[in-house]
Length: 140
Image (tube, rainbow, N blue to C red; front, side, top):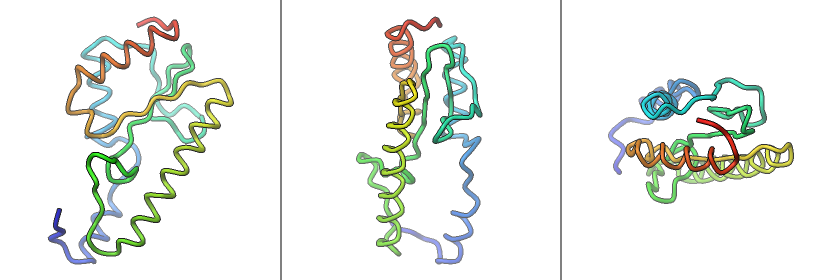
């Protein structure tokens, strides 16, 4: 993917990206939960790593990882400029994700992660969520 922005434009664009309320991830997952009547979830629950969604009764933490920020192996999104910085940044994000998973599991939580691009297939996301919730004895 070629970058058609100047470094200043790219910097400004990247600075506007927020970690909460992203339409392509969290808002889409909320739509999926509602469409498929998946209940029992909460947002902004105080846990390590700040899961996007938490099912308290099932002790399930759900993350929707952005393909760019978390280094999706399918999408392979790395800017052409300043590659060393971005490889290191994404590598640190992956290490942090692993540490968060480990800490949540240590505390007795189950962790499930979805890639941002998975939100394009709501029926698959819903099916996976329902299967996970049922397997751990949670209700829908």
